[in-house]
Image 1 (cartoon, helix red, strand yellow):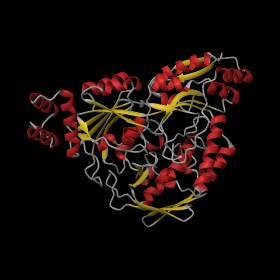
Image 2 (cartoon, one colour):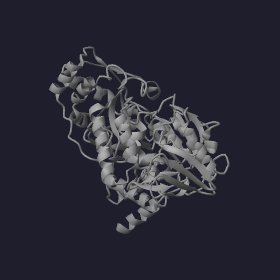
Image 3 (tube, one colour):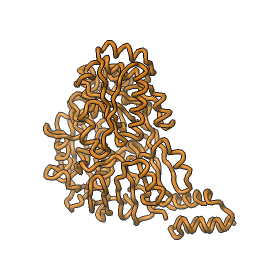
Image 4 (tube, helix red, strand yellow):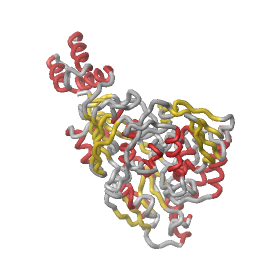
Length: 526
């Protein structure tokens, strides 16, 4: 029997036998369906990537107002789309390492103030134009200009000058920054011809796929770029189908309508993982589900209101009833132990008495309005209801307004003064703080402006002594903890799922869906 099973596994791995046929023939040998499914998946994985076919991905977090401009990418759906056709200079690799992509190599001056990136030769854009260092410079200029709305603006603020010398792109910083290579992995900074200045939404890049059709908020279709410069990307066609409803998205995976989904609801993740043809992939990291308030808008400009809301948050209840254990407790900062220079601080526990004290001290009596949607994070309306209950125990009235899923990221997030949201995190503190908490950052979605915080952030960039730098980040975390507009009850595990029709899931760093590269790294197995 062993020899026959090995024969079946070899044929399955070579793509010469479907899952259905494999299970049927294994069953004839007395092998149960669950074990046969596992054997089939292992055989396909061991055989390595197969080329061709179509992979369909069910995506949450996208809307009809989404832009195709990578500078404006603000949700998982948009980032998946831009990953298909565009590439950055550098990318994250497992172990928090840096992988050169369009930069063949990079180096810095001894004080980490001047950085040189040698731009890879022989790379062409999907329109046939050769990529040059001038395209890199133009891209970085577009993301750092006075009129830009780029989500990368915060991390570009510290650049004093940029220039091209031959095939080298050179950045001179206002202050040294040993983390600059990590900042260059930002998913907004995709290199476009002429920087994308003529048409940033043209979807012309150096990536492994080209866009064939786009219906924002509905569906995107990509086909393999036959002139792509490296061996990356296995499927011939990739379809991204927007399914914002959690139940519908999971049902599409179970029925075979899609092969891969993001944001599996924690409530049902365990049950879904027990299905014979589905695997849930759990990845711990810096992602966090949050309640964000504009500190420059009443009543959130009153720090006693903020402290009342923070002390009135039952974090453990959120972990138990929203994440169902797939995550860890937050502490009103965006930084957790996944960051290399993390320093623990005393945990803020649920205390309705302290919440009531600060609420009374604030002089506020009217209800606070919180806007929410399932599109902000899974079960966000349920989380809002739990928050309402825990605040109610402190005598603090919270009014909840449920917003439509479509348009949440264009009409609510970063516009309305109090809403639910999420951040996928960043690889290093400087990038997280620079993107969302630096006073001048375009994505400062809490309108947090603190001179001391800004000074510490800039000083930390220039500090090459890791112990001193770590203390600076600890001080910044404490400022946010006590004075910020961020209420962070929980850090979420990334929960994605795939059917056994596809294989190739592996270790990654960064965001969910293998840092949003899963559709390209995986392959059709059956």
